[in-house]
Amino acid sequence: MEDSVTRVDSRRTLRSFTLSFGAAVLALACGSEDSNNQPNQTPVDVPAVDPCENPLNVSCPNNAPPPEDEPGETLPSDGTTPSNSGTEPASQEELDKTAAENVLSANCGFCHGPALTQQQAKAGMNFINDINRLVDTGRIIPMNSAGSRVIQYMQNGTMPPPGSGYPTVKESEIAIVSAYIDNPRYWPGVKDANCQDEQQLETFDDLYQDINADLSGEDADDREFYRYISISNRFTAGVCPDSLEMDKERQGMVKMLNMLSIDSTIGNVQPANDSQTLYRLDLRDFGWNREITVNGATFEDVWDAIADANPYAVPFVGDDAEDAREDTGTDFPLMFNDQMMDVAILGNLYYAIVDIDVNQPFSTFVSDVLGIDVAANIANEDAVRAGTTRSIISRQDRLVERHDINVRNGVFWQSFDFANDANDSIFEDPFGFVAGGTEAIFTLPNGMLAYIISDANDQIVEDSDILFDTSLNDFKAVTAVSCSNCHATGFIEVEDEVGPFARANARAIGLNRDEVEQLDSLYIEPAAFARTVKADSELYLRALQQADLPVQGGDPVFRVFQRFDDDLVLADAAGDLGVTITDLRDDLDLLNPRLAILERATIDRDDFTQLYVESLCILSEPNENQPDPALCDLIDQ
Image 1 (cartoon, rainbow, N blue to C red):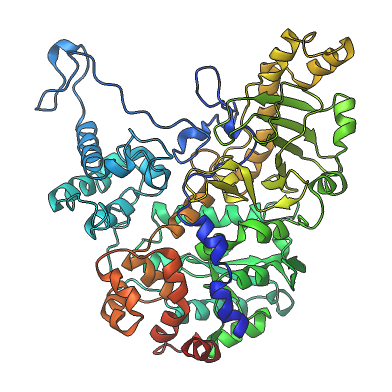
Image 2 (cartoon, rainbow, N blue to C red; image 1 turned 45 degrees about the vertical axis):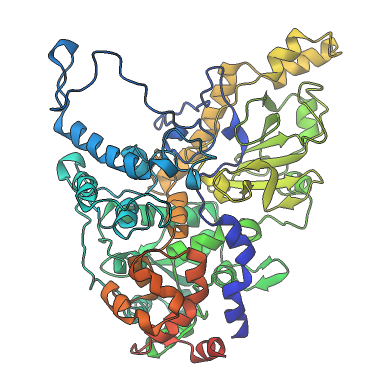
């Protein structure tokens, strides 16, 4: 039990590194721009999607302020379009949307406005005046103003920040934004998600009873492979089960499981209760029923490795909990989706789950595990390359390179970055450069994407010293979150600058005829490169379709991860603790005084994590199933 307690603080370093994640920014073509300073895009058939639709994708240019209206095109005060403009009058929806965006811009633009770069804006969010982007990143939930972060922060006085010198937002202005969010005419097909019921609750007792009811109908030989993931903490936080936000939570869960799978087919989960807030997974469907080693510690299966890293994974006792533990053979038959995601898609745990041995050199993984002979492919003209000087996520030149995976169907792309102190350039030698770091994306056996970072010494590492993520405190990119959002729709094109330059200057840089021919085979024409990227992306998009996941829009994994790592409001804390919003408000005086701030403002996720088990022990006392008393006793010491 002592290990369970120390686990609460064991990941402080990594968590502080990943707190307030904004844009995910790793990998291949995420950092290339064309001559118009716009990010290259990958044409796809199912259907074509601009990965820059997600505004937190830092591979894309910052949102520029809207251009000023030309003379004679300014709307008059009554909101109609001037009769001499030759255009239709603005619709009521356009007027209401503009009014809501103006409220947000006026009150929050100093920290999140479009005049700021992503580096300057708080958390990299410089689009407070763009409701569409706020929806795409989960900060506004259509038909659910009560559950939308921007409304919650304005209502509880968190935004603008206390002490900033800016006044709190007027209730009348908050009402303007809320009215737009909740207007069903502006969100056709979206169900009303404003449950706004502070008594809405699914307790740990409810969950363990549902687990046992589900297990009772299954064969004994299968039960040991069954585990349960819940999104009921979002329901208890006031989110309706059939709302768009819950759909995004479910999508994030399914994608997370499959991007962490080494099975050859797409796996799925089965609802285990009527509200569809509890799901059963079979470890065998994702290749999770195997022993793995993470940072020197060996675990019986992937689930237990995630539970060990998850400070919210707590062993429960009580008739229902103990029956579930006995049937499944684990102390942790239940975990919550967002809490799992917060640890499973990061660093060395992520590598272990997708079967990447961090103790072997990166090049050994490529050759021995993926069966790729990079040197032979280059010599035999079986690879494709493109280089750019205009990477947004790297301070230096970048080069990307493609190979087929030989041991199975799939593709492998690696990118090379060049350390500034070495002053290396891809233009000095298009064949024999020395990279300062390498990143890779490759297709898993089920068609989903996996990611690796390695340093200049060919060692697999958790984060990059060269690539940067403007939303992180130290600007480093980390696997796999810094990759998943950027490549939500697959691979992205790079506009090659190396081939044209080397062809035009072949004599000056000393290329002979054979090398020029090799140059042509590696640094192919833009149209051929686009076709290659398109075909590779389609492998991934087909996997998304097989998992019944959207092939356009933002990454649901990143959306859940980002929402979870945001500061918590009272409703979020109630959901994680398994109590109603009203009960938590009434019982705050029983908990650590640091949580009292939830009455009027937000609390940092890491601060709440440190107090979670202690708070859970106190609030669970009336329940039939409670955290293991031995764990609670250790915290009291």
